Image (tube, rainbow, N blue to C red; front, side):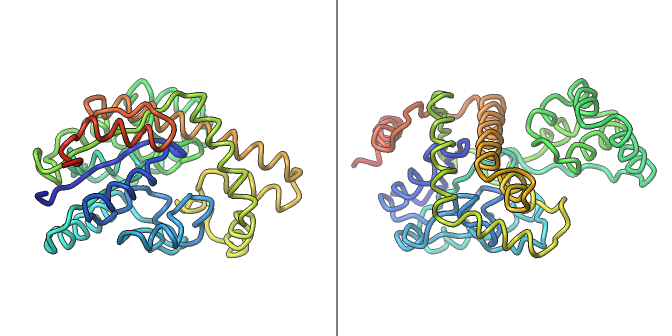
Length: 309
């Protein structure tokens, strides 16, 4: 098969990593991470990075390559991902990009905007307004100006919330509109794509069950080790879903059972936001609605029957 780029997106716990690995084995491809949290080395279990056994089945790129003390932007990931894809294709192999960060996929297929610089005074005012208004009111105002940005930004992500408002305040144009007015990083016709979109209740059940497994397998040790580093709380790795809730339990602020329940709740909310974003921003991508892996694979082959040849 001619080398191509394959894109597999989906909310957390939807089964996308297993699908990507099976596809890579089927076509002799290599897997590139498109998940903002799986970039970081410190939380393999909590971010559901592929296991060493899974990584041994196909080459993996950009998984666990960044220290938690760093904060990668979308642009930095895009440059690294494009370099990885170019290297893979230079060896005549397909690249399979998989993850749950919708903005990464949008940067690939629509490009990354060159947003004008925002004056320091505007940034200072946005920060002050966030403090004065609180996140809920700040979000409500942002939603009126840039609903796409508000929908995709995670709770407590003050940096991205204020950034989206700064751009609108400075330019009179939504950050999402700036991002839409770009050229694709990978040309149309060079890639195939699929988005996993299982039923909501089934997805939530998978989220809950997987987090219990993570805790049994040592996620609390990961959380404790990261907390002991005393890193700035606004770093991306420190915002990993479930980290704050489990760290609170380890600190004795809540019982462990409550910490797990809180982490499960936040994971479900995160999955819901991811699914909503994918439906809104990738509405033209083919969908897989199945929950179990074999059924997902059959649906995938039905979309791309040439893979069975």
